[in-house]
Length: 327
Image (tube, rainbow, N blue to C red; front, side, top):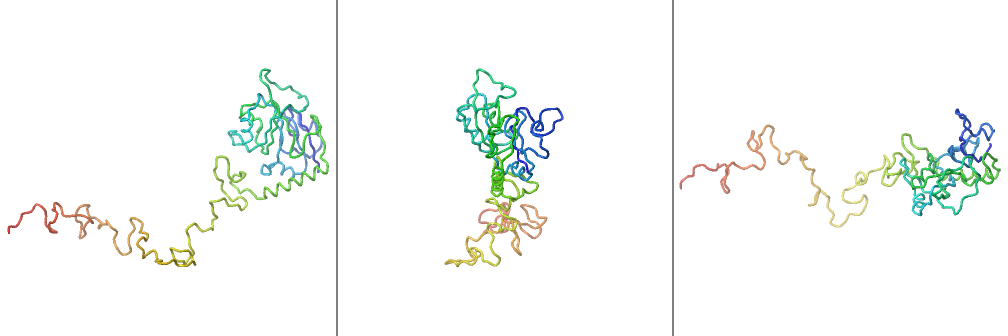
């Protein structure tokens, strides 16, 4: 296995071929069958790890293992404490929020080589250097982060991957990791694998750290056997169910409270749902089929009607307004 650390120069592609003739890693490392771990933008500089260890390459590239990367960033202007705190908390990049980051304002510029093309900056506006440590891998993430808080990036140098740093490497130079460095790296990756878990993301579902993506929407699927609070599995019993044969109104197998009566004999027993038909009887307010509202229809009478024109106290069946009998 080969493990190579390269200081990628400015305007070099993090790949070994290019159809347009731009510089690639092949111009600096002539070792067959090795590949870069992750990527570093064409206009960025600094540390790149190359290896033919596919398992380690996967572990270092997989976002859920959260391999930290450290950057030295030259920005336009002097960031305020509020802007630095915003970078630490995470910023909205329109495509999603960044995770928490370690951000430090460097008191002076780091000792770096001269870039192949000088940095363009405005003489009337000062520049500052930040050290930013992140474990995400969004496209051009650091540049978008600083721009989102109002301080565009002028120069970006990757200073470290995990605990591996640039050291004395100059642009275009590379070295192989020592046996001790390889052992420490593989042990760290094994520990991170155990911490992150070895579950597989369910098909047709999204993976988000913690199971909750930005915005608070919960994802579907079971994340490696983990059941989120407030949810239950398909074979779990819903709240309020009781074992078959247990009596209502008290816990199954528990003592019967004093004065206990079944729910059906109590005054506060639950009533039937509105509109339900009692067994063997007619529901309140029902009328025979074909009967007209407000009048007799067939042999049935409409519930709650009274004789038309009747007076209070009149005898049943006596129509109001009829002739009076003389005593």
